[in-house]
Structures are given as C-alpha cells and as structure tokens.
Image 1 (spheres, helix red, strand yellow):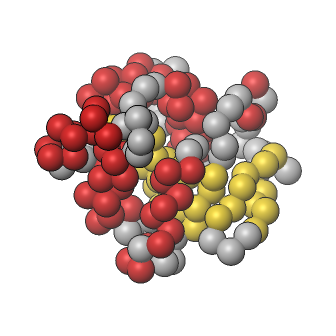
Image 2 (cartoon, rainbow, N blue to C red; image 1 turned 90 degrees about the horizontal axis):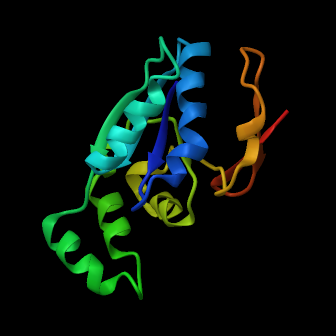
Length: 157
C-alpha cells in the first residue's frame, strides 16, 4: 500500500499535528510505502527535524509548490481564495496518482477527489487539531474508517 500525507499549508503547524503519525506508520508497517508532500523548503526542513525523533523511519519527503504565476498572485488573492494552495494541488496531481490513500488535514486538499485520475484514491481527512497526538502509537495501533462517498475520517479503534 502507498500512503501519502499532504501538507499543503503556508505554516508548519499541520506538520506538528500529523507528521509523527506518518513517521511511526512507516516504522511499524514496513510493507507500506509512506510519502510526505510538503509545501516549500521551510516545511521540508521542519519535517526533517521531526523525522529525527523517529529513527528508522522510511518516509519519502517531497517538496511541492504552485507554478510561479500562482505564487506571485497568491498574496493578492489569499484574502479571498486559497489560489496558491489550489494551484499547488493541481500542479502535483501526478505525484498523488500512484497512491492508494492520501491523508489530508485540511478541507482545501479534499478538492483533489474531483479529479478523474485520482478516482481510485481513498482520502483520510484527519481534521486539524490535536486528535490522537497525545496517544502512544504502537505496532497494535489501528485506524478505523468512517465511510462517506469518497471522504473518510480517521479515528482510533
């Protein structure tokens, strides 16, 4: 199984909430490939810093970004729409296509489910917040899924 964690945000707080899950998942379930997609070098550096707490992890970290025109327009448009975030999603569809599952902590990223090339992809919407962050993650840890049309919400079993 190929599982992606997408952090398409302007700041690092999402990483602090969910990146530990990605790193622990890669350690405890070695048959699964875990990928992390982060927006920009600053978030990649933060992901690397968090990763140091998970020796032996096998998460593949990839930097994603929006096309130049979207990056230039984003500061002007941001008060009205998340054009930069949406452009980054659209520009990186080919990275998400080989995945089986994509974990997203924000609603903007759920717009990916409308793309035909991602029709097979299962989405886990973790919802921003502390969530299971205080619970220890062990090899017996399981994620159950509440199913709705194409969006799943995670919870501990």
